Image 1 (spheres, rainbow, N blue to C red):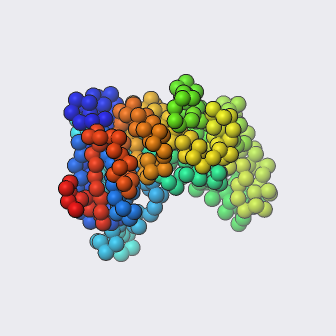
Image 2 (cartoon, rainbow, N blue to C red):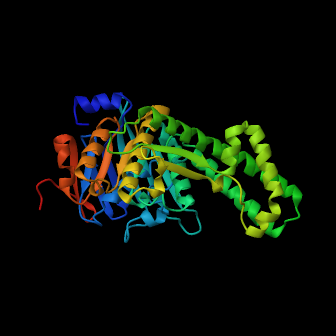
Image 3 (cartoon, rainbow, N blue to C red):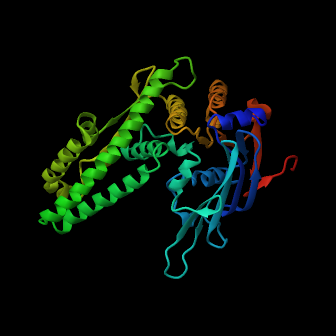
Length: 393
C-alpha cells in the first residue's frame, strides 16, 4: 500500500493505481492537477471543500452517471464554460494509460455530447473503460440501504453487477424502455394484441437476461462471503439473496423456458397491469435481501452501527469478487467512512483494505482519522476547490 516496490508488486498482482488526476471545470474544481505516489489517498478538508467531487470525478470512469447519479450538465462548474473534462493516468500491468471523459454543452439544437477517450483515441462509451479499471464505492447515501425501499437496493444490486459485467447497464436501460413502452401501449391501445405480443417478447428476453446477470453476481458474492467469513473480524459477514417472481423462475428453469413463462405471465397480467398503470411482475420488482450472518437476523433489524459495519463488509467482499471475476483489483472510493467508525473498526478497515491490491481513496474532515496510516498514504488537503500545498496555512 506504499510507494516503490510494494506499489509495483500490487500493480503486477492485478492492482491499479491512479498516478495523476486532472479536473477542469468539474463541480467546484476549476483547474486541478493532482499527482499521487501511494495506494492510499486520504482527501482531507471541511465540508463543501470538494473532496467528494474528486471521488465523483473518478467514478465517471465506470458505466453510468457516477456515484451521485447526476446529470452531466449539473457537474459543470458554476460560472464556467458549461462543460467539464476529467482525465486519469492509470498505472497497470507495468504500463501507463491515459483515460479521459468530459461533457460539452449543446450548441443550438444539437444534443449534448459526452466524450470518452483512451490514450487519446475516442471510444463509444465509458463501457470501454472497463477493460482498464473497475471501480466500487461506498457513500453516506447508502447508510439507510437495508431499511429503505426495495428500489434503492435494486440500484445497489445493479451497481454490484455492473462492476463485474460492464454490459449490464445497457440491458437494464433497454429493459426499462421496453417496460415503459408496454405500459404506454396498455394505456393507449390495450386491444392491440399483436403489438403487445411483440413488446412482451422483448421484455421477456431482456428481463431474463437482467435477472440471470443479477443471480450470477449475487450467488458468487454469497459463496465468496461464506468461504472467507470470519466471526472475529470487526465487519460482520452478510448472507445475500434475491427475492422476486422472475428470480424464482430463472433459479429453476433454463433461460428459454423462463422467457416463455415470463411472457405468459405478462400476457395474463395485462388487465391487472393496465389498471395499476405499471407492470407488476418482472425484474423491476426484485429485492436484494441481506441478513446479518453471525446473528442470523435481517439486516434491517440490526442496530445502526451494525448496519454500517455490515455494509462495509459487503462492499469489501464485493471488491474481492470484482478482482476474482475480472482480474482487476478495483479502485475503492470511500466517502466519509472512517468518521463513523470506532477506533477498533477503523483499524480493522485499514487492515482489510491493506489486504486488497487496488488503490483506495477516502475522504474525511479530520486528518487525525487517518493517523494510523502513517506515511503509507498520500494525505491531500482540499479547500475551496483546490489542493492546499503541504505546509501551507
